[in-house]
Image (cartoon, rainbow, N blue to C red; front, side):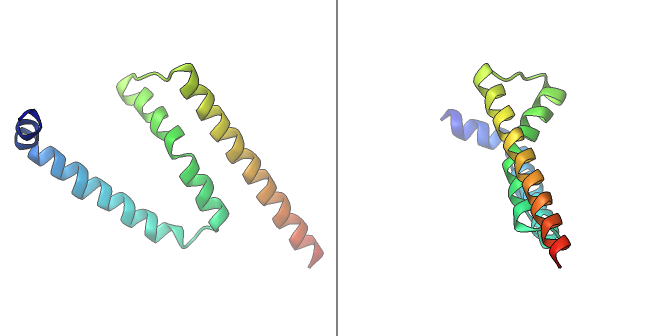
Amino acid sequence: EVLMTTLSSNFYELLYLSAITTTLANWIQTKAQRHVTAERASIIYAMDPVWGSMWAYGLLGETLSREGMLGAIIIAVAAVINGILDFTTRRIKNESQ
C-alpha cells in the first residue's frame, strides 16, 4: 500500500527520472562511446560510482563511510594506473612504427 501511494503521488517525478534522465544519459553515452577506445570507456564506466559519490557530496551533503572512501580510492588509483599503462603502450607502439 505504501509503495502504491508513493508511486501515485510521485508519478511525474518517477517518469522524469526513468524516462528522461536515464534515456538521455544512455543515448549520449552510446553516441559518444564510438569516439573513445574500449580501454578509455572502461575507465569512464569504472569511475561512475566515484563521480556519483562526489556529486552526492557536493549537491546533497552526503558522506562516505571509511569503506566507501577506500573503495573510491581503489577505483581511482586503478583508473589512473590503467590510463598510464594505456598511454605508455600507445607511445611505445607509435615509436616502433
